[in-house]
Image 1 (cartoon, rainbow, N blue to C red):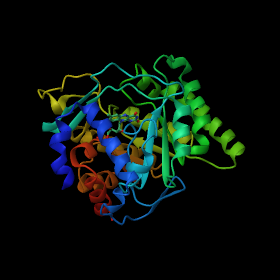
Image 2: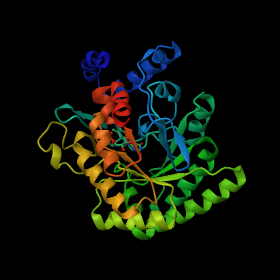
Image 3: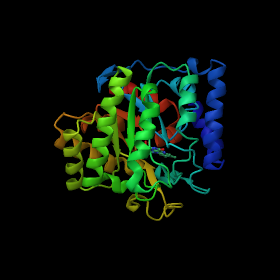
Image 4: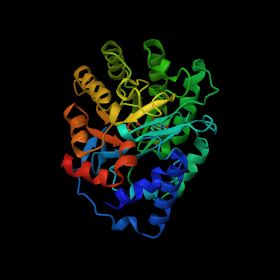
Length: 336
Ligand SMILES: Cc1cc2nc3c(=O)[nH]c(=O)nc-3n(C[C@H](O)[C@H](O)[C@H](O)COP(=O)(O)O)c2cc1C
């Protein structure tokens, strides 16, 4: 209700300014204890990847790339928070403007390009936060690291975040880092997953605890590609798959203002494509690897659609921009 009143003011701002203003306001409200006053839904706990989630509704990666707002975001009632994508070294991302609203379609296009302050800064922020819930840390590669050396970037991030994460997400599906999605292809993915899995078992020994790893994939994959990815997930015993990232398709928004901006499209127009990938994964994975469904969830019914398609957990991003924190509550309640 309150968000409905605030939204026109936020939408009158440049989208990136609105993003910064919203996070700063949430931090201030958290510091004053105001977020604790928000009505809360009582979710059903779920066990996935060997982790107990207090409810099945999480924050998707990209909203808090540096893990600088964890405490405030946790107050919104999420069952888990995913921070990142973080890269080994800080990088500015693409030139602005790089974030666009398509209100008529309840959609966003972004080409942020992994703007972040680097993995060391993220680890400091996680250490400074008092959050005790389920924290996913999403890792990527720097823009200037060639794909032949991408694995080094993922391993460098994995080494640093391992002891600070409840699970780690390997993001190979952003459309805004040139050629990143090439890593979803057979040999490249096989090589990446075997290096990651080997390092995971070394780190598990060193730290005396096993931290699960999830792979985040794109919606722009055909059934043969999804089948090939599923086979590699099972072969390498990857702990979960997150489906999906944003889409490069524009058929669902053709003709709308901003529709021709380069980048990844999210929100309502990606929902069907994401759910199709969740369903196809569920068919191929036969319950061997759990699925986290994300893409175009703007209502409790949309969250349920992902679970019905085979997801064990869901994540939200663009829906929060259009619906506000009420969406978290609605999804949790709907899933109960
Ligand atoms: C502005 C913006 C930035 C994003 N940044 C990231 C990111 O850094 N890493 C990532 O894995 N996904 C990122 N995403 C993708 C979301 O996590 C999510 O997978 C996608 O937007 C589909 O969900 P939605 O329709 O609920 O937004 C970003 C999305 C948006 C809108």
